Length: 315
Length: 246
Image 1 (cartoon, rainbow over the protein chains, first blue to last red):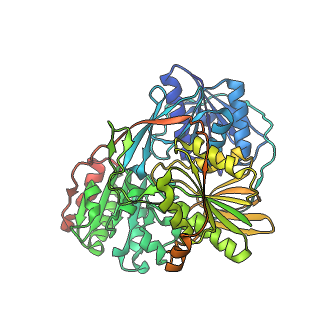
Image 2 (image 1 turned 45 degrees about the vertical axis):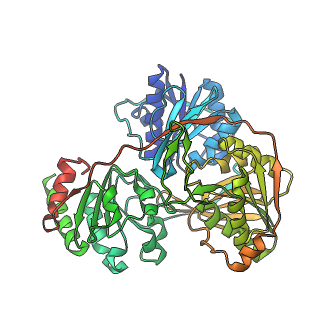
Image 3 (image 1 turned 60 degrees about the horizontal axis):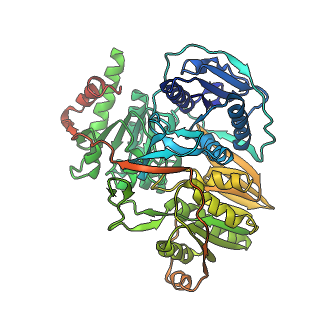
C-alpha cells in the first residue's frame, strides 16, 4: 500500500507532530509492504524526513505557507499522481483544516486523532476525552488518518531520502494571515512538551509561581495550570489544560496543588506518567497518579528543585 | 447578519463511561446529556454577542433524534432565535456534515459556527467537511472572532504565539476556548424558549464513510506509589530509574 503524509514546518524545522505523522505513515506502509511519500512545501531541507522513515519527499517549492485549502489541493494532486490509498496528517491545526476536506473530495473515510497503526481497515482512536478507545472501521478504498500528537514516537533510524520537486495547481488562499505574534519566551510550547509541571489553586497566588517555573526549568519541562487559576488571571489562558483548555499527552505530568477534577483529568489523562503533589490525601487526582506525595507544595517543591539540580549535575 | 450555530449533544463530563451490546454501543442508562460545551459556551455565545451588537438572526441546528429536544431548548433559552433539527441518525462526521451542508446551502448564512470538537467523539472534523461541502473558507480553532464589513477577523493559538487571520464571509469558523464566556440562561430565556420555533426536517439518511466497530476501556492504571514528603528527593530518583521519564 502506498502512503502519502503531509509534513509541516516552522522556523526552518519540521514540527514534532509532523515527524510523528511521518513515522506513523512509514510504519503503516511498511506493515502492508508498501512505501511512504512525505509531501511538504517551501524552502527547507526536506531530506531529513527520510530520518523519520519516508522513502521520498515531494516538495512544492513555490508555496510559502500552509493554507488549509491550498494544502488540500496539494495533497489531492499528490494522491492522484502517486495512486496512494492511505493519507496521513497530524491532528494539528493544519490537519484539522485539511483532512476533512480531503475526506469529502476523495469520498474517503477519515479517522481523526488515531493513537495506533491501523490493523486491516480498523483504526484506534481516543474518545470521551481519553476515557475510552474506539475501534473505527473505514469503509472506503482510500483511508485518511490524522495522528494524535504525542501518541506515536518519532522514528530516527532512517536515512536522508531524495527530495523531488512537485508542483500542483493550488489556487489562492482565502484565509489571509494578517499578523503572527510570537511570545517573547524561552519556554517550551505546551502542546509539544514531553514534560509538564502544572499547578493549581493550592499555590495560593501568582506570586508563588517562581518555584513552579524553577522546577520546570530544571526538568526541561513546560508550565501549565488548572482552569480556576487561568480564570482568575493568575496564569495566562494558553497554559490552561483540561476539558475546555488544551489536552496534552506528555511523558511526564507533575501536578502541584491541583485536586484533579474530572474536567482537568480529561485534558491530561493521556500522560504516560502522572505525579501528584497535594496536601489533601483525599484529592481525587491521586487515583489517576503513578506517583504521589501527600504534603505541602511549599515544602515539597523546593526539595524537588534541589534534587533535580543535583540530578542534572550528574548527567 | 445571519448566523448558523451547529450544536451537538454530549454526555455530562461527570458521566460514567460504559458500553453495552458487546462493547458496540455507548451505555446511555443514567447519563445526563448536555449541549457540547464548545458549541454552547463559545460558538453559540459569540454568535449571540455578534447579533446583539450588529443585529441579525441566530439559528441553531442539530442533526439527531427526538432526544435532541432538551438540548435545542437549552440553546434557545440561552438566546438563539430559532432552531432546526434534521431528523437523522448521527452515523459519522460525513453524514452529519452532509445534512448540515444540505440545509445551509441555499439559506444565505453569513457565518456558520461550530465548536472545535465534541467532548465525546473528539473528532474536530465536521467544521472542515461543512466548509468543503459548501465551498467556504474555514478558520479552525479560533479563540477570538470579530466581524466588520463582511470580513471576519480571528485570532488563534499557534505554536509559540498567536496569529491573526482574516476571511471574507460567508465562512465556517470552529470555536476554541477564549471566544466567549459561558452564559447561564435566565428564567425569562427559559420561558421564551418554550415558544420559539423548532423546525423538524425529515430527510433521507446520508452516506457514512466510517463506523465504530467496538469500544474498549483504556488499561487500568496501577496503584499510585507514594513518596514520603520528608524525603521528596526520592521522587526524582524514581522518575529517572523506575519510570525512566527524566
